[in-house]
Image (cartoon, rainbow, N blue to C red; front, side):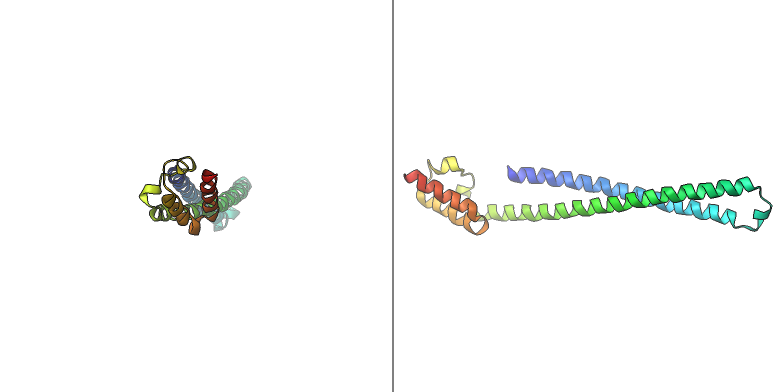
Amino acid sequence: MVLEFLNSYEVELQTLLFEKTEDLDLVSTKILETEKLMKLIQSENSEVFTDFTPRTISDKNADKISELNCELEELTNQKENLSNEIEVIEKKLKDLKSSLEEIQSFEDIVPTSTKNVSRETSSSGINLKDKLYLVLTYLPKDPLRAKIELESIIKSFS
């Protein structure tokens, strides 16, 4: 059950990572386009014909450049935020994958006859040797659970 949840969470994180990566690519493209447009407008202002153009065109170009600078600043902030979010998601995915590997390696250690043993069934139908073997397998990976299982074995004899 835990393994299923972790697998579904991994798929969810991978989907989110894909979406954020696409958003980052889109923002990066917008930044490049904005920078190119700014360079184009600035080159129009710096040409030799500026003395012969009406002042309103130069003023409009200056307004457009300042507007593009604001837009570029916003896009840069969005890009930084998306990069940070992607880093967080990648870290979560890395931690999740290591947890999944640990759980799968733990399931490989536990014998098949004791994989589906819960606290309720451990007190009823399974013999003492199997219960103790289960505790022994829990001990290196999860000492707290091993202690709980030992306590349940002791309570079953009381």
